[in-house]
Length: 274
Image (cartoon, rainbow, N blue to C red; front, top):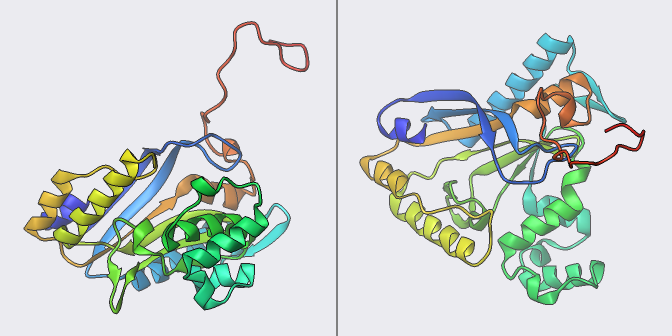
């Protein structure tokens, strides 16, 4: 779709099946449905407003209310939603200062205190990678009410535009409800030189063993050289929305054919059946 934008298609969207590596579990299925959309000459702020309106209106239409039960929680989807920086949330959850949160050495020291058995050779060395670890360990599960998380480091946002005045960060958000990520949006990076450099860094990380890093996409770089307008784009997980609207805490309850463990020949279930 971003190649379509470079070709002059101003706004576009797709509802499609997506596959991403990862173990199947109660809240994750490797194959899932996603709404992905792009709007030329819009910003990530516009997308946050659109997202609030889209999901609160959908809840009202489907459930008759914007206040929904989900497990032990009562979720309020009415506007406005909280917006908070990633570093701010990490500091809030850990008690670290704003300066310590941006210091890889301080983050490493705190991690070693909380995880004394961690292999020191396997720990991150950069702020961006540490933020991924700290956010998952200390922040994500406690984001119960709808929250836009902003201020993502450029290092972990290979497709997002850098923030004016602070190129270490990007104009990107993810939004969370009930401890689950529901969507990801950002101002698209439309500078082919910057994008090529970030793809190269991602490819290098992949060669070093990071299987979640991206490949170098030469065709996309070529499309960017033709010119893509300033654009904001977002992806929203439809299956997790179905979980929320139907108060189902397992994603398997809302997918017709969820990924399951393979049948082992000769295995017997606990109740004695095959």
